[in-house]
Image (cartoon, rainbow, N blue to C red; front, top):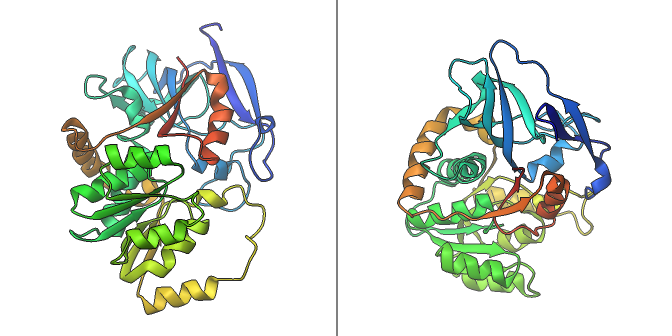
Length: 340
């Protein structure tokens, strides 16, 4: 590939149900000339996150969808090749929010400079970036954990869930993790120090969860929805808090799930148990508190109080399959595509 050629994935078609490789198209394009404040970045790492499935749809949401033939959105970490911005020089590592491409030209005012001596630069896509920030604010601001609370966290070995579990332990909670498969549960017990981990694939998942929460549930960090929430709902204590971060089990649905309408039951539970249920979009709602998160998380990671796992795949061409794998729960840790 020429140094002046950009490879990028665009949205070729909108998926119906689960995305397939045919929904993406790999293109080559010339790199545009830099404007007055622009920076040219050679991207080394691409973040793959569940929210990307929503951006492939044209359903009304909190953000504009990716246009057909438009660049797939996503965060990247890369190295500055050329700069017309006073704050950046060639060789600087930066975090950018442009999309799925090997080279990006962006306004330097939108970048975040990274220090490779503090942590691996790819951590800016996970524990020190959006997923870590999501876990931090969702749990601490909405979940309001107190010492002795029972905290249940779904998708507990993913980048958000694993961070929630560990912050919960730091705050003195009894943490019950939910994950898919014994290998993930073993990791949660051994490396995240949770008090229990329940495999949601087990036939008696709901019974196992109830046994693990004899005092009920005070905080439930919602990443999944579906049958996991069905098992959680009867166990919620009066005054329980539910930060709603994601509903990955529903992202590929094309219709409402089959079965009885449980909305009235849910609303009745919210009323009788005085539940706090709050959805949030991290940078829309909490951007002003990013410095607080950055200070605390860098300290915890530096002191070894928070552990972090990446699931890295090599090769830019692997990006579509990486997203498909994330939506199917086949990743083990934060999914990152190594471009370089």
